[in-house]
Image (cartoon, rainbow, N blue to C red; front, side, top):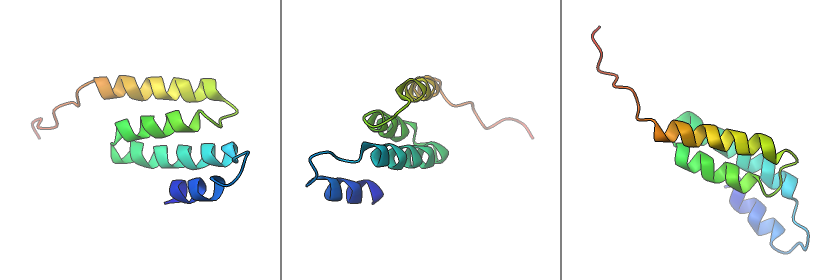
Amino acid sequence: MALRRWAAQEAANKKPDLLKLDRIAISLARLEERRGNLSRAIQLLELALKGSPHPESLQSQIGELKQRLSVPPANSSGSH
């Protein structure tokens, strides 16, 4: 919702507030990561790159998430 609101408000601006986009996208990416939706978290971080004052840090985080995404989850049916 916040991302859609930003897009609607900034559509008329010649210079959109990319720092605000960065903050919104990063916050949403963290939520998606906590939910286990790593693909969506990566998409949002890539969107945040457009306005980030620290793209190297975001690129590193994207790389880490992509690596986690490529590793199959551990089997949780161990003996208790």
